Each structure stands twice: as structure tokens, then as C-alpha cells.
Length: 145
Image (cartoon, rainbow, N blue to C red; front, side, top):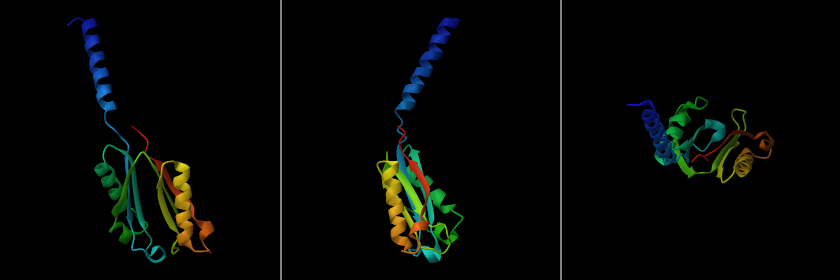
């Protein structure tokens, strides 16, 4: 095969491959949480996933991450997917002191709103004396196409 024709074929294959990969959407996310509902006593486990090709893939990744959470092994054992989302952001905020109740997470259309909502949820569960200790721990946006 002549080198000019070979170069043209290679170029055509590369262009076709690029077009095929564009059709694969990578904008699915999920959150998994393990909790007894008593954050101060039992802690919590958390896992998030973004930019996955399907809701199922996002759920599987979030669940796997949550189950590997080392800070609260009993809660990691009971992780479950609580929500999936597409082209949104999630944030997690909590009081880093062990034995405190402040925890909050949120999903929103943009990072700022997700952060504000997660922080507000943490402050609501922290109680008056611990509200100021809520800190954003994670913020990720599921935005790839």
C-alpha cells in the first residue's frame, strides 16, 4: 500500500474514532451515604462519583467509595446510594471533630449553590455551639459531555 494512501486511511480511522468517542456522554453522578442517623455517636460514611457514562456506573463508584470509607467502618458497611444526578455539582460539609453531629451534603446546578446548601445543612445539624466548625470537605461538579 502506498504511504499516501496508508496515511489517509490512518487519518480516517482516527477521525472516525474521535467521532465515536464524542457520542459517549460522561455526565452522570451519584452520592452514597452510610449512616444510622446519629452522626455524633456513629459517624458517617460518604462516597461520591461524577462524570460516569451511566447512572449505574456512577452509583457503583459512589457505593464502592463509601464502603471503603475508613472513618466509620460500621457506617461504611451500610452504605447505600441516596441519589443520582446529571450535570450538577455536589458538596459535603461536616464538623471535623469526632463525636459531633454536624454533617450536610447537597446537590445543585452550580458549585457555589451546592457549597452553600451543604454548609447550611451541616450548620442545621451541628447545633448552636458547633455551627461555626462546619467545613466544606468535598465539592465536585459533574459537567463533562
